[in-house]
Length: 277
Image 1: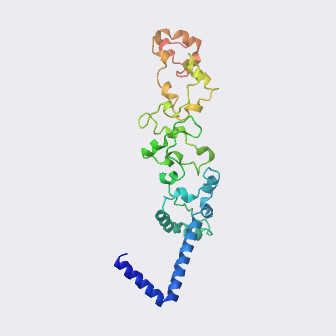
Image 2 (image 1 turned 90 degrees about the horizontal axis):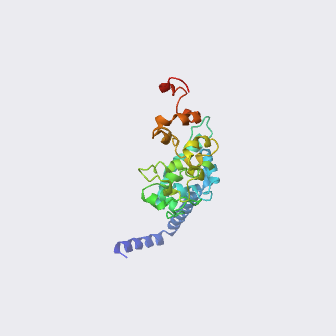
Image 3 (image 1 turned 45 degrees about the horizontal axis):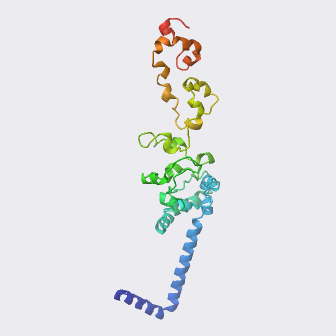
């Protein structure tokens, strides 16, 4: 122990011996303040306390129905560590004061809680970043690779707690914002390890009959991730039109005029033939 520390310790002993009554009061006050502060922090960190503010009801109601119903608000919305917690407590007092000062006023202003977006470190306290498969299986999701690319967990799982039930699972269109063939690969097999081509897609005349079959087949089961999916082909000439189509198109047109009408107006033939077939 250094000489300075020894001197301070000696002074403290002397002060206590000469002022025991005052020193005991100070010690008791410090302990009481510490216990009160600890209890206050624990109480104000519970979901029940957050729920007391009417502004939080929709978020808390969704949380109660989610798989995170046993996890406290602060476990996610606060960076790990004592210092971030204390800093937040100091800042959050304004929300509490605002709530109680406007609560009984007519037409009170809407108060928005200044919640902090969960950071990856908070998620990592419960979840492993080494997970590679989706919950349902058959979906390759290398979480660590995404984390290494500086993505936030909330980029994909932003509605897992406070969203409606139908919003909690990441949708394919969200994945495709990055998996567009440029930022990240867009081949089906990159993510879908068990998804094969449906049998009806393999039939020889699929391109000819898929339009009619789309009325009974749920195309959106696979293709709803891109609203312009159909236009990727339909804005181009069909394959049948590429080889000697002008000379041979008469017979197919007579056999299925409705197929022509899928792209061409009724008077399209008149541009060349001068008559309506």
